[in-house]
Length: 461
Ligand code: BES
Ligand code: ZN
Figure 1 (tube, rainbow, N blue to C red):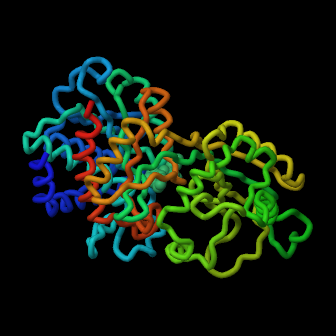
Figure 2 (figure 1 turned 90 degrees about the vertical axis):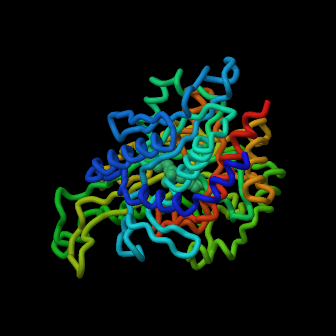
Figure 3 (figure 1 turned 45 degrees about the vertical axis):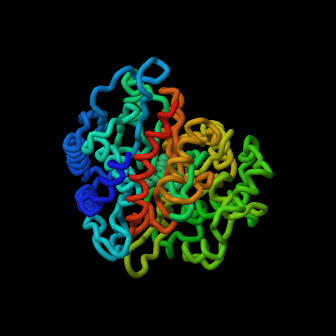
C-alpha cells in the first residue's frame, strides 16, 4: 500500500498534465455538433485505460459511447459468488454546455492552472473526479501491488442528458456488471477539511411548457390590447406556482414528502456552511427559500419548482414592438425521497392545465425524470468508505444529503442490486454547470489517495 501512495505522490505533475489532455475534448453531450468530440474523448479514455493496464473497450450505443474498463483477470462476478469482491466505479466524460462563453476568463476547453485550481468545463463535473480513481488504480497496477478486489470502470457520455443509453446498457450487461457496490465521485464536499459521504440525492422531473397565442408575431400597436400576450400569460401562470413563503402551490405536491427527523436536522446544522458565506458565494442580494427550513435543508432535502429557461418574443438589440406568437419555459422540479416522479408530473400538469387561461393554447412536453436516492450511511460499505475518507483527508468525514441528481444510481440499485457510495471531490465554489468551472488539485490528490484506501477498506472481510 505504501508503494501505491508513494507512486501517487511522485506522479502528481504528470497526472495533472494528463487531466488537461482529457479536459481539452469539448465533450458536450447536449449539442449535436459535438458528436465527433464525444467519440474522440471516449476513444482517448479507452487508450488511456489500456495504457495504465486496464482491459478497456468502447461500447457504442444509440447515443454516445460508454467506456468499460476492468482490472485484468476478473474472476467470479461477486464476492457472494465465491470471487473477490467486485466494485464498479461510475463516472461521466460528458460535460454541460459551456455557454455563455463571454463569461469565461479563458476558453472552457483550454485548461488553465491558477494556484491550486484547474479551470475548464468538466474539470470538476466530472472528469477530474473520475480521473482521480483511474490514477489510484494505475498506481496499484504499475507498482505491482495486488488489488484485493476486482474493479470495473463504467464511464458514460450521457449523464448530463439523462443517462438513457446507460440504463439500457445495464440491462443488457447485467451479468458482467453485477457488483458488490458502486463508487461514484460526482458530488461536493463542504471543504477539503470536511470530506463527506453523501447518503441522499434529490430526484428530478423535467418538462417544457409552451403557451401559444396569435398565429404569428403581431404589431403590438395595431393589435396589442385585443389579444392575450403569451409571454404575459405564461408569466402569470408560472408566478402562481409558488407563494411568497417559497412553497410550491401545486395541490398534493408535498403529500408524500417524508418529514426531516430532528436527528437529521441537527446533523445538517453542524455542517460548516454559514448562510452569509453561501450568500456571498452565490452573489445574491439575500438568500431565499421555503419558509421554516434552513438553506442547507432547502437545497438538499426539500422539493423545488424551478424555471431553468424562459423565452419569448424579441431578444435582439433595441426594441421591436410585437405581441409574440408564443412563450416557453423550461422547468425542472427537484424531488425528495418518497415523492414519485410520475405522480408529481401528473399533479403539475393537471394544475397547470387548470389555471391556464382559455385565451392561449397550452402544450406541455415531458422530459426526463428520476426518483431521489437514499441509502443507509451505517452499512458495512459506508463505514469502510468513511475510514478511507479519513485516511486520505486526515480529518473526520461528515455525512450529508445533496440537492443534485444522479439518476442512474437508482438503476444501479434496481438492475444490479448494488448501492452507490457517493464520495464526491468537488467544492462548493467549483462552478459546476457555470462559467469558470474549476477543480481543486488538493481534492484531486486526496481523491486518488481515498480511492487507493477505499479498495483495501471495502475488501476487508
Ligand atoms: N454531478 C452532478 C450531480 C450533483 C452535483 C449531485 C452536486 C450532487 C451535488 C451531475 O453531473 C448533474 O449535474 N446531474 C444533473 C442530472 C440531470 C441532468 C438529470 C443535475 O443534477 O442537474
Ligand atoms: Zn453535472
